[in-house]
Image (cartoon, rainbow, N blue to C red):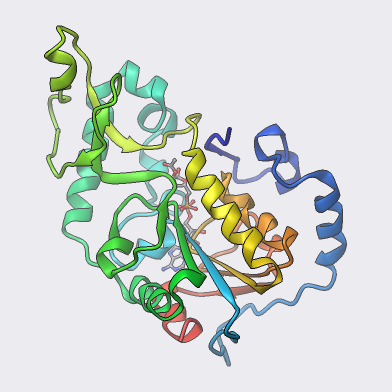
Length: 291
Ligand code: OAD
């Protein structure tokens, strides 16, 4: 089972290789460490070229909050990020929801409101264009719950942390269903449970910390990488590398022999795991990089 969990910003990456991140074994870890010495670094965008691809190249793009920053959606760990004004234990954990569902619903309702008035940016559009070109040789995995990739036209997509504009029951199988309502004062009840005489709350369709990721999602992304092998090009965009298992997908990509590229505005916690690091804004970099 793959659970979502985060690392602290200051601890070294290797401290976090525990049972939760075990899909790349220690042997692969040693191989990767040897490879680090050879890694190239492109730390600025001057002279950046479009990705070189052959007809058998397969591309997996992983996006994080930075990919939506230029659409006006706040990130989590940057200055003024969401985790500066909220404790994630309070608003993004099952325990927090049990303790104060009103606070949790207000937090996600406010984020819903922001997403509803946002538009996809040039980075989202470039990713969607690449998918249109590559078809089944492309897969997008996003940690973002804002739905902007879908609105830009992405279809071969895994929303690994859920979707902000969907709701489900916290108790029964109802949902997830589309929902743009804002529940700022009163958390919504589940009608299916009410019809059976039970009282349960609806919850946002978000994978909270400590919850399991959808196993089908994980197997789809790992199968894509395994089938691609050395033809894989893994590109992470706008993600700080603090949240697992997303932060370790780079190692899964390297374990199959794939190329790895990070496009990020600031230094990411797992930046040293990538062969190539391009520092900059995704809305500016991706239209050139992805062609
Ligand atoms: P973070 O907020 O941790 O990191 C965002 C990263 O994007 C930072 O490293 C920034 O430098 C970078 N960035 C900001 N603007 C950018 C831009 N315009 N172009 C490129 N990069 C930019 O967000 P995530 O890594 O996505 O999980 O966070 C992962 C998970 O942690 C989220 O999905 C969420 C959160 O807690 C859950 O809620 C389960």
